[in-house]
Image 1 (cartoon, rainbow, N blue to C red):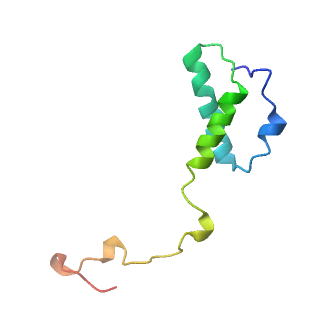
Image 2 (cartoon, one colour):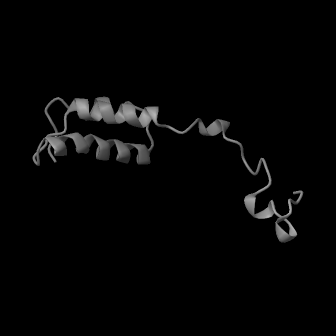
Length: 87
């Protein structure tokens, strides 16, 4: 799919995205042009919208995520005959 003349790849590369996030941006940027017609092109506005969507939909700051089990894992929460068990 062709890129519009307004797309500046060096400008787009300034965003701090992982490889997987970049893949998502490219795929999501290609969706609007496909709905406009089979020949594209992908515009800067399409990329900007896809980048905004990717940045806003981040789950959380990974550094804040707890490591390990904070509660009893589900497969250990029930004892014999379905009674609760201490971990």
